[in-house]
Length: 266
Image 1: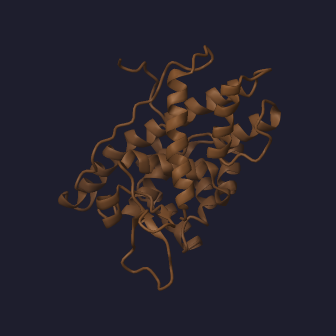
Image 2: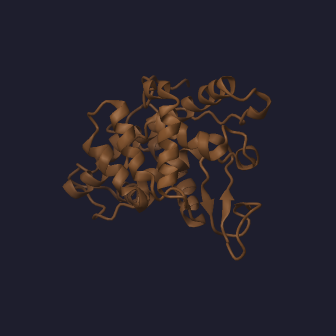
């Protein structure tokens, strides 16, 4: 999966701006609940015996992060839908909305109306926990890879400017990409979910998510996996491997996308 340095910068900067806007924007239409991010260090999973014990430790650590990021997506989605129905926007609201459109690569006119609401519905949404777990386990070797340990990168995100990440030891001659580093595993999860939601390579996945949203989780996840053909250079082989990962861990399908909302502790 290829994530440019420019995209990473946009994700980080605009993500912070949006979060601050949500906290301090004095509009009653904004939710009061703000999901917590647990910026904890990645455990040393290599010290845990491989097999069921490591799998359990990995999922126990990562599931709350995925659910927190999903909750943030729903918060932004609800807020964006409310703003997109306002008859008139202030300058600040217009700037907030423009930042959101840039962050999610929304190409429709970034102004209140049905086209924008349709784009919000498609692009700002949750990723099933089972799918995120399967990709994280595969991309990071259950949290033991060099990129996970040294860069908090659980999903194999790439960047393309010198020094933006870790250089792969087996990078082909002439290749310029690095594997992005993050300040915490939570930021890696956040970048992954936003990439799935914004990148044109995953349009099929988003279409399936939108059209099959009322399907049972196993059927929904199976359909979404088909939209991951561009995530890896290995194409369909990668798709089959993610599918097999979920088949081998069916209990993951029981995890809800988010936990029940609760007021933040002040």
